[in-house]
Length: 375
Image (tube, rainbow, N blue to C red; front, side, top):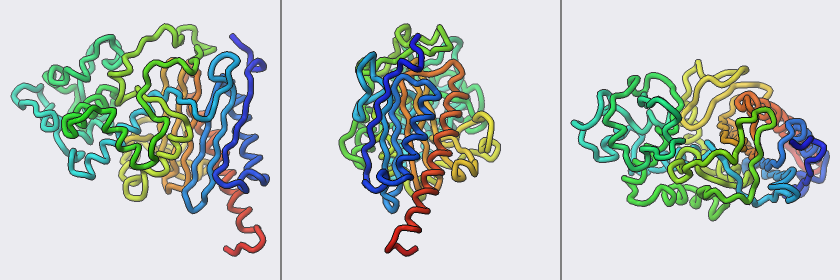
């Protein structure tokens, strides 16, 4: 196992507005992000921050290596694990707003399944239930359905829906990769095209061609085993990434994901994401449950309310954050995770959110004191 001291550090900053980095605000932020990444000893990390257009600042940092002795580049696509669900959720919101697949559509109607052939409670299951991880689907013994060698979704959804629900749809939160797979099946059925094309259209209309693509197992980036979990060896896992398209099967670079967050979830659409019940919104402590596509957290140190999601697969740490007022978004992607990945990710979340709040405060003060500018 490499020591932290052997990690090669490379830093690249690609500013949207040059003066953002020429003064103390940008330099301080760069140093802070670098120190946070170093303190968490991640082999290779991309970090990108996008601010709303009225502020106009963007920051992009790359630290460390893509693979031994090869520096990580800004444009390199990395696995994004469950951040893929943001892409699925975006496509579902698009389909709802266009009338192709309203969120209150019953899943069996979207898939044209005979109601007499489904299990008890399945008839009331909607797309909105699945997006919010409140589908109530029965989980079969053994590993997660989407991580099995031959998952029943996509392809055998009718077979899955023949079983009764475990809980009434809409009642309880139970994280479900399978639920997002079924959303993908419904999107395919209503759009009459592969899910990759449905998701691609949602992305291109916001940011044009990008690095956000289905992950195909390409090892341009090495995914390192966890230093504190000998069983967390990425080389031992063989995932069915085609089956995981809607739940964890995409790759991207951090900057393109941050750009997408900043342009895809605006105004009323962002407010629709904030549907977590009050007992799910917290100011401290580990997460409890989800909103529609994101976790929701209220914390003054983070600038108030934030919407966020993380992702974790062997060798992958991925975090995406969006301020509730739409002022900024940031994304971190790395090629290693930790044994207690939920706490590890939330430590990164808190440290980087505090750094962003400090940056925003510094930039606002700089604008107020710049000669010739009146506020």
